[in-house]
Length: 153
Image (cartoon, rainbow, N blue to C red; front, side):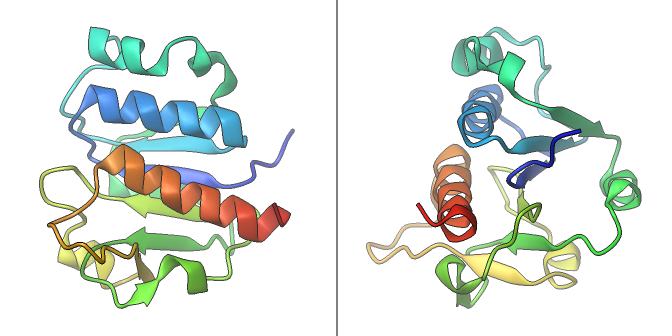
């Protein structure tokens, strides 16, 4: 059984196109994708299929009924990093390791406080301002930085 480079986790994702784009990123990185319900779309949605194209065959996808089910499925010693605009530590300072879990919240509201406060939280720099990056962009930036740190690209 292969060990993924890392795991990208989407908590209650709302937009099919974003999830499809994140799945493509996972495929090219060799990362596993975890989706935590409820979703704001169906995995058979046309927008999801259009975004993921033919990359889904290269993605190991895990669906979890809720946060508790996701936690129960974590391997012992798993490291979960929460990404939030409210965090103070930059993602480049994390010291990612193979198999880490990168957690992102729903597009409209981000991760809830109760979840974010129980995990090490990271932020992506936004020197130009704005509320937040698009979910697929944020996951891509974070995943490639994690890959760079792990593999030394």
